[in-house]
Image (cartoon, rainbow, N blue to C red; front, top):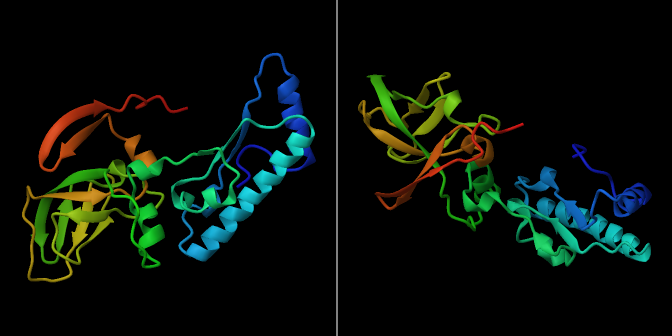
Length: 229
């Protein structure tokens, strides 16, 4: 994506040599994350693009080995390509993270092409109806401030009639639109929402509430809360 790092090639070999010769650094290996392919909805396109990135990494590995700089660690991949990248037989470590939570964005990677999602969703935001004075609409207490908003709206996991959709209704409010005018939620009713993007949503909260079924098992602090650069 061009955010950091260096493209494979002679420049990369020169950079690794500089790191390996530095007294202040220890050269261990390479990291390759093809973030631009993780959410591609076409399985064939996602596979082709990811394996292409892995081939480039493998070629760099071979060039480094010829230069006496063989990497001990080759880490990379992601939740969207966890079942693709091992086929390249390049990585020594599969660097996957979001699968532990999942979110609407990653669920769409499999659901939109009609596949079965390989991981269960475990991260939710609970929101409460605070107003229901209009037909076909309810207002909740979770708006822009409660979710990362870079990947669209949350998906309703439970608590709403079938076909209902969630939308951002303001900084502090969310909105529920019903598919049928015959149903109506009441103030105080709670809903569970699948977050659009898990990583930056976690960053908005001080703690997790760990549930087993309907039982609260534990409350875990989000230790990195407020410590982002």
